[in-house]
Length: 121
Image (cartoon, rainbow, N blue to C red):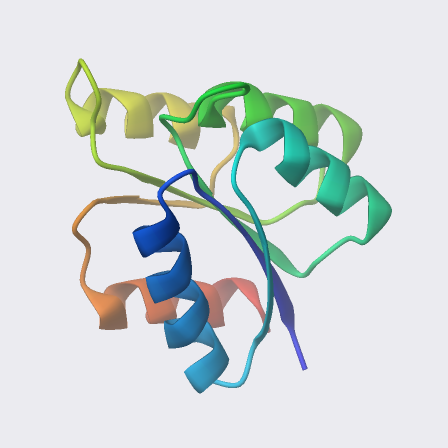
């Protein structure tokens, strides 16, 4: 069974993603900020990471950069609702630094699941 780490500071999004992925048969672990997410991945690597971009403590861009530096082969999906600037700008940066897929919130369930299946083969 594939294991997925979700990093998001919004408990509603975190729970929605967890429930959706668990229904699909994935094992899910969660972290509510980038700092905890990186530590969680170091302690117990997963097959995939889904991370929000706008978060307190350590935001998603820095989280992706740290993970890529330490674990070059990590598979990452970045999600963002925007923040002060357009979500598209954040997601372009995330893609540029190593996220394989990016999605603006709200995203289509099936689209995200397709990306998850593609990265966990």
